[in-house]
Amino acid sequence: MPTPSVIGCNIGQKSHQSTGKRPSYKTLLQSRTTEINLCGRKSRHNSFFLFTESRDCMGNFAVEVRRVALQLMGAILEGLGLGKDYEHDKFEEGLQLLSVNRYPKESEGDSTIGLAAHSDYGFLTILLASSQGLEVVDRNSDSWKVVPQLPHALHVHVGDPMEVLSNGKIKTVVHRAVLNPKEARVSIASIHGFALDEKVSSAKELVNEQNPSKQSKDHAIHRNLIRSKPAMATPPQPSMRAL
Ligand SMILES: O=C(O)CCC(=O)C(=O)O
Ligand SMILES: [Fe+2]
Image 1 (tube, rainbow, N blue to C red):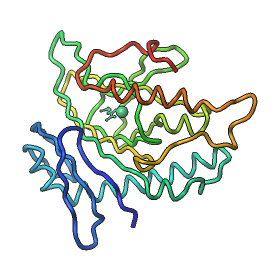
Image 2 (image 1 turned 60 degrees about the horizontal axis):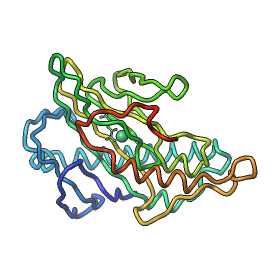
Image 3 (image 1 turned 180 degrees about the horizontal axis):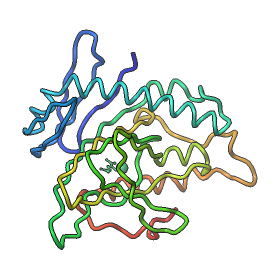
């Protein structure tokens, strides 16, 4: 069974070593109190207890969502003409980060953004959200588009390393989360990448005279974006992002 490298929330750190059949994983803990409905059980707790109580559920979710991510990755690699097993071991041994975000309900006249505009540091992000709030940049009109909340659907988007590996054939998705006027919102973003010490480079099969490697440019952008990912920040306009 594949082993997720990291499962966690956005804030704080603590590690749990699991035993027996379950995959070993580390959990990063969120300090804020939150309410979340996992596997039909609603709990309102400091997140430490949430993750202690819901460990099996979160562990199972992490394993399943990773399986989906690896299958999707295989299909994308095949679509790029690289073959579904391209860099197979690096994906199999790669990093999984579960980022759990909790956004308050939007109060009247408040234009606070839940999560500032950014692109993700993994190849693929699979997002489960309790209600609508995700927005993505439409590159054609250079404007924000609301992602509709479909019942029982997961949202999938690609991140910076995918743009690098595909040498620009697939573009990273710039996105943000806005507050929902009806309710507080919880989202779980499962981010899938290579191990932290692995470097991503453009597939040589996709580099040629017409499409020279865009690797170094994208790496610089990637570093800037990680620095510019504060929660509750004012969003930069999409056109400010130098892609
Ligand atoms: O909560 C959302 O809709 C987006 C979360 C997100 O983009 C992230 O955790 O990277
Ligand atoms: Fe994100």
